[in-house]
Length: 539
Image (tube, rainbow, N blue to C red; front, side):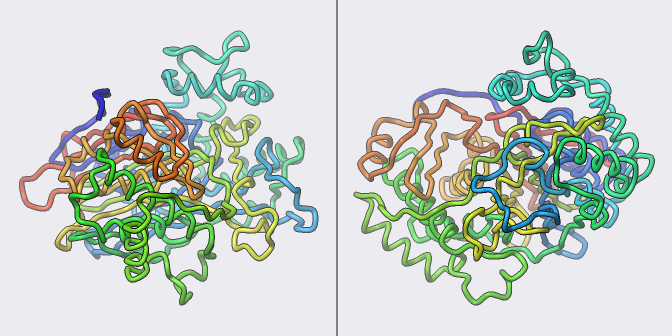
């Protein structure tokens, strides 16, 4: 591996840990823990704050998915907070191409309902407590980082069409420069109203009325009927598996945990010493495992409501994985040539990981789909509408994610908990759409097979293979032998910069297994963010 080091944010604490893609969001979570809140309170506060300080990736106008571990009951489960297609969608009038821009591209936002439900049912503090840091962040503003500046410039053509975005994010009709402060007074008022009236106001109160009026004025699809049927999250059983001596718990459909499970099941068939990603053999094995898993996900899409009832759970079957392992042994010298249609996978996301002193753990992956979502902001409310209408199947009516009234979009989230000897050891998650599972698999194999520490595993060089064999790689961080081996195996390589924004952003926490061992957290250096633990714990 070539030397190209970038410092990641890492921290340790005796009282818990918060790792997010925004320093202000991390601080919001820490404040809840120091205030006597639990991991759920801290995670919700951080998630709400991420929607303010990392607006290109998530917010009130999007959707949130969570993986939870409650230590007292030893219960691991997921919170499916999928958004929902508006009910007045007419299948016979479905456009030929996915809707990506403007109000018509937005599904019914579910983030307020998911975070509100989760905090009220499992949190310890009040909703006004957990939303307060995000109100302050919206009022006082956040500093434009190089990453946010680059994304504003990249999307400026579309963003300029919305007057509120221009007012808050632009200066002299140009994206605000690095170091400038973005204040969001409309969003602050919206959050303040939710603080006073509860999160339900987003759907049933004045906020909901303003959303519907905005939709009517600008040709959107969301109506009172959509908002009155609040998209409450569904608690689902977790997807379970193992990887060597670890137990794996991750997200079932509509998420992509089964992709992660198949990758790990396939890699498990190889000796650990063969899986060094910085050696030719390890890189080729992993790239082929990634490709197989993504091909299978496209071939066998599963509706989330029926997944646990279905007989065909091929992707998480270890017997099937052994067949793939044997096949990879046989074909390391050439690439696959099957081509299958794939769902949209260009979306953007964010992830946070939180563990408290009591051992409760929460991983939340949330998104507004593409960068800055629909590139349109809710008039007078200050949040970006999502563009999850682009994450449906538009042509095949038999597909479980075909665009239908009230339908749920395809998702690639895969937050994961790794247990060691019956106790949680690592909490991991990442944004990146189809790159989520492959990014997490690389971190996991470095932790388990190579013995890297968490900081090294997350900062290490990374690549991603699509189902069609396009391999995105941080080329300058790999040696020539690895590059040549991947090319010889038939992969089509696309160069990405070192610590590429494109290749995920893993937020991780290492959880103590014995008394006296600290919590350890790491925020991926590929984006803005920080890891931090509380300085005290209030019983």
